[in-house]
Each structure stands twice: as structure tokens, then as C-alpha cells.
Length: 297
Ligand SMILES: [Zn+2]
Image (cartoon, rainbow, N blue to C red; front, side, top):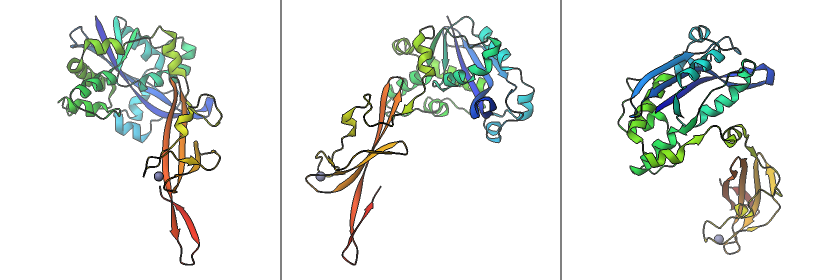
């Protein structure tokens, strides 16, 4: 069985047709591994942009891909063909986090006329596998970690690699895979790219919910408890929606303190996620005896 790990470098360029910026793929790097996770082959291709005559300074600094290098690259469809040829026998294709997959989806429109698309069989998010191993080793933080951080965590020196070069990032991923492989975790993380849900998920655009009466909203997410006495706060006005947040004043029936409760609700492929904030409204005595109210964040 062969595995392929790939990585993409992309630059944020203006796409005139849609009047917005998109992340255009400018480099594909990949490594091939045998069944013992030894690296047996590698691929690195740089792509000539069809949307921009130059790369951004930030991109050049990060990846080492200068405008000259980009201009001497090959068309995206040829690069994808090379990648497909390289990974033809791979049962599982992996990337570090699924952000590369979203970039592939974004670049599909640039490939549309060529009839070429990235071919994958089974897909696995290597970041999830590595973070499962990190948790096993006592790393509690649930936030996504960078590839460099994970490499250092497992004692891989990144000094010999040009990080943010697609093929070197893939190589470091390969070394992490060898250290972190666990058959059970690996199996649970495998995704079949032929399952229609795989791409439906990638094409789903999450959006903030703006209507308080939206049936998808979980009413319990709109309740707050007093930070002082844990009593459920009473809402004392209607919910308002502004700058993507619902907000309303609340009062604690015990302490009588006033608060502003805020809720941000986003519809994702798997359902709604929430962010909540509560801030106290401080009452201040002003010299003339009139109370003014200020909000402490
Ligand atoms: Zn209270």
C-alpha cells in the first residue's frame, strides 16, 4: 500500500471574474510513502498564475517563490495532472489540516475548462492524527497546532527544512506520520472521497444566522447565568442584531446587577456553532448625584 501526503502553497490574488480575492494554488508538493511510512518519492511543481503577473511580497517571503519563479512555472492543469499521476496508486492521500481541500475547491473554477481535477481515493487529515497522539502524550490544548509546533513536539528539527515549501512541509508530515501512526485512530479518520458528502461538506459555505426566530437556533444558547451567584439572568429587553452578534441587556434577580449578553451563531455543515459573551454594566456615581452607566468589557 502506498500513501501520499501533499501540500499546497497559495497566494491571495484578485479574481476579476468574481470581483473578489481567491487563494490561487501556486505550488504543489507531495511525498510518497511505502507501507512502513518510509518516503520513497517526492514531487514539487510550481504553477504560473493565470490571474496575476506577480506574487505578493508576503507570499514570496513565506514560500521562497518569487515572481520570477512563479512566471517560469507550468499551468495549473498540468501540475494537477502531474500530481494525479504521482498519486495514482495511493490508497490514502493526506494533508496537514483540511484547509488545502478548501483551496482545491476554490481553484476548481480555474480548472473547469480543462476537465482536470485532483484525484483522491481515501483522504485523511494528518493534523487530527498527530493531535490525537499529542493528547495521548499529555498535550491538552484543543486548538489546531501548526506543523512546526507538532514537529518540535515530537523532536523533529525543522532547521534542515524550508518550511512553507510544499515538498518540505510534506516531508515533515511524513516523518510525523511515522511517529504518530495508530491503526485505530487512522481508520476512524479515513474519509472516502467518493462519498458525495465528502465534497458537499467542502462546498458548504457557512454563514451567520441573522434572524432570532430562526428554527435552527438552540434557545438554551441564549441564556446566561450570573458570574457572581450563578443565578439565571433575566432578559430585560428584546434581542437586537448588529455586526453579526445578537445582543440584549440582562439583570440578575439576586444581585440586581445588569449585563449585556451577546451571542454569535454560525450555520455550518454539521449544525450551528455559538460564541457567547457577557459583560457587566457598571453603575458609576457621578458628582452631581446622577447615575451614568458604562459597560465594562
Ligand atoms: Zn447574581
